[in-house]
Length: 333
Image (cartoon, rainbow, N blue to C red):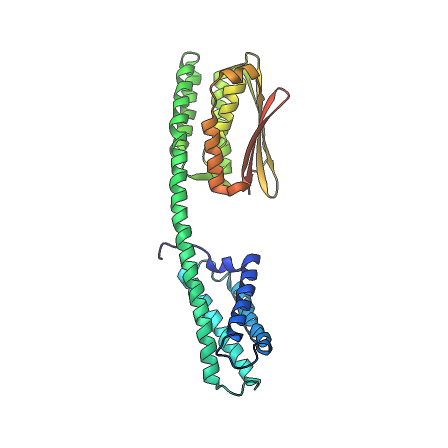
């Protein structure tokens, strides 16, 4: 249990949790009032018992909401203890208040308090146990996901480094000075490839993409024009390392290399309140695209990594428009 990390109290403060608390509370009221050990009319007892349970549960949730800032950095175990203490405290206080109304004649104060406290304690402990089981399962799934993610990202390294070395070797024969600059830039990119199992700030990811395109501009010279359309300030967001670069590599491989005429690759970044979108436009040559090997593995790799980081909210799509090939990457904020 010492490895479990999570915010237990925050998981109680949402619409689904509130609905679950109300439903479970009502089921508990029905079980208590229709028990064969209860001698009174269950239909007359159901309303006050339901009111009692819902008052205790909703008052406990309200208190937890007020304490969420103070408990934001508390451990999972500490949050469990607070949850149990809050539920038991409200149960005792509400039970004493009900007893003072003198509507219960056949039971003593001690017996009434002890019974209610025992029921509340059992419910709180059961919830704590289920929470621990859920947290342990989530931790195991997180470990498995991280292992799968590392495997996916490890496949990027040899692919990227192989292409980088080929690029540097090609430049050596054309321009030694540019080749030296290229090797230094590739060193930064290769260093990023060695740590591609990490999430990095968006600003750094864009910088790596710009370095890659700078290297390609040295290789193609006047044949390649790069149009960067970026906002003045990039949003603070972490993305999987080397997410954009393989998409740019596809644009170069299929839109620039086979094209004898001058080509333009446009990279646009659009920012909204809920997401950021990368739009990459490059020339589309139908015959050349059929004859050149596809980089589909890298694209599928990116899709899988995005899904593991952001779920289904991240999208990677592409389509052909006129003589342009457009790739659109949407990442939730």
